[in-house]
Length: 383
Image (cartoon, rainbow, N blue to C red; front, top):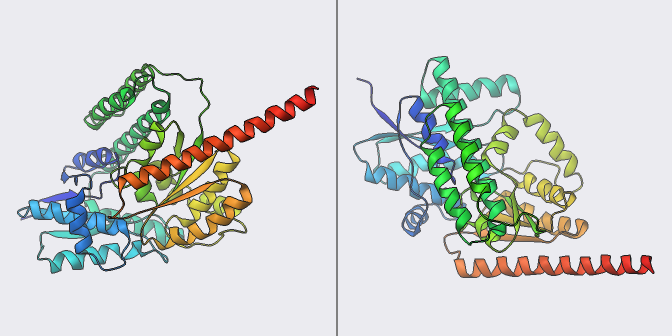
């Protein structure tokens, strides 16, 4: 008799709504971990090897909670995999060993990875792991699952971008966030049809645009760089995007599920060549994780006219720690302020908010100084 499988995957921001649809279309049960809280963090930290990076502890705590609360279910735990000097590649075997040692036997770890060169090996390896993850299905069913999940991810990201754009411009504090929450729930529970998702997205974007706000306003612009998981998961980065938006900042996140996935699968070679070109003289070799992206995106943000950059890094992340040292030189050479924020289970919200406020105040002061210089120059030319 075939064993019934329930899927559980890493919770990362709002993207869980799309991953739920993917597995449901394939006919599987799925359980989404709750957002991180002190209890799950404590469980993950206390059972992790000393020195492991923060995302590992977060996800271990989430998986342990799901297994503990559902002892009669059998789970496939979806784990991403990577190669190179980043410890990300060790996550899966460590999860398996720790969970087995704690007495859990109702699970198996299934890895998913990108398509890495050489392509004649990378593509077959990718599909082999995909089949191991979800089994064999009719081609149309698998394509439909990917398409629907992709559209839901896209729709959620469009709503997020709209929210962060409107919050610093809204007339009534909290009105945009309220509209976003309603919009997200509609996309989350939308029928698994492309037309329905498109229609709901258009309707909800229109509703969000109707939130009373002032569009014509010039705000400080801050780019967010750093490790992908910490950037994309609001419950572990203390909702940094939302906090910056409420501080009156135009905030832009460099990594989203869409561009992160595309840059590692469909346009990997083009992305790598572009990154090496931008990073020349700073970090033009692979150090694992998203370290190279952090350098590249800082330079690109400066060229786009951004006022500052914030690096979001989990404590213990080797690639981002290496990038942090190089960013000090990039900051000086390109004259763009960079604030590095390290997150772990000890990070307190009060001190975190204070650092954000000080950074934003500094950016506003720099703007005022630059504007006064421009006005003086214009005055001299006029006279």
